[in-house]
Each structure stands twice: as C-alpha cells, then as structure tokens.
Image 1 (tube, rainbow, N blue to C red):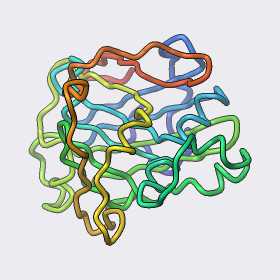
Image 2: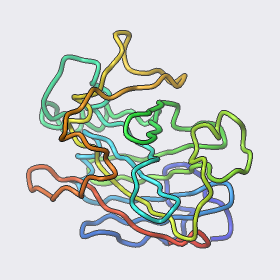
Image 3: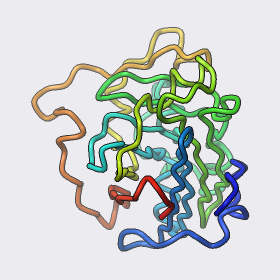
Image 4: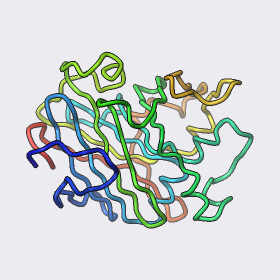
Length: 240
C-alpha cells in the first residue's frame, strides 16, 4: 500500500491486505507511518458482532511490541456503555431484538483509554488526527482507525488524544470486547455520561479482583458469552 487509507468504514483502500487472526473469522491489517497508525478490521462472526454491539470494542496499541493495556481506543462504545447512565441491567443484546440493537449503537463517538482509569470521550472523526469509522450490521463489522503517533505535530488537540509515543520496531495490537462488569462499575456524573468536549469518565473503586488490566490473562471463550481477547505483533516498518 503506497497511499494512506481513507477512514470511511470500508476496506476499498486496503486492497485485500487483511489476514486472519485468532481462531474465529476475524481479519486485520495494520499500516504504521511516521505520524499515524492505521488499523483495518473485519469481523464476520455474527456472535462476535453482537457482542461488539452490546459491549463495544477496544483496540489496544503497545508501541513496545508487547501486550500492555496502557493506551486504547474504545469504538464503538456499545449499548451497555451508552446505557450506563440509566437504571438498566442485563445483557443489552437480550432485552432488544437484534435489529434494534444495531440501530441503536452509536458510531459517532469513541473513548480514549489511558492506563486503568483515565478516559476521554470525543467525536469519532476528530479532525485529521485521531479518527475511526465503522460499518456495523447483524452479520459483520467493518472497522477503520487512525491514531496519531510519535512527536510529529498534527495539532495540539489531536496530539493530546494520540499515542504520545514513538513506535518501536514491533507494535502490539490488541482486540478486546470489554467485560460487562466494567460498565457496571463505571462512575457516571449526575449530569450524565461524559460529553464530546472531552470530560473524563471514571471507573468505580475496585477490590483485589480489580487488578490492572494489563496484568489480566486472556479470559476463556464461553459459548454463552462470545468475546474477543487477542493480540498480534506487527513490524513498525511495514503493514501486516
């Protein structure tokens, strides 16, 4: 790929470069550049797509090539997150028809996650810097993401929400559907969920079971609760 892809929720610019990762129909491609890291993702598993619609999807980026969950982008947020300010419980996908689930999933905002608690919710198409776009339906998810990296200036506001680190020779990319308990523990201000102006969302206090996410082992797949929790390693001088 010689030109940077357009973040538009399609895979036309990727020229069939996506490859399968994990043991389910999930394919991905990564294009690192000096100023932006591009990620393309396709999920063709209806159960996983419903899990993403209900619980959201976090893409983790570790510039050291390991599996540290210090910087991630949650997009889409998922119905459970969207309803975190309401007095509702239970699996979002079980209380609505499948069609209603996908119609109600918001694709206009994303959340920047730093470490275990620092979160910022901003528009999904944040100018020419951090941006994401997805096409979501009952049977598939097509996803594109661009993350500012390194020290190349692309605007102070955009840089604030980027990786703020230079990519190493290897880059770790993680895909994770957030656990339902995370949103139940979220502390939502009385005035509602954080706005697109970038007000932080916080997690509630945790006990011993709430260790830092980067120390948690991948959770096993369960037939009644499909999820994503996988990592790939890519070279920063070329695309996967």
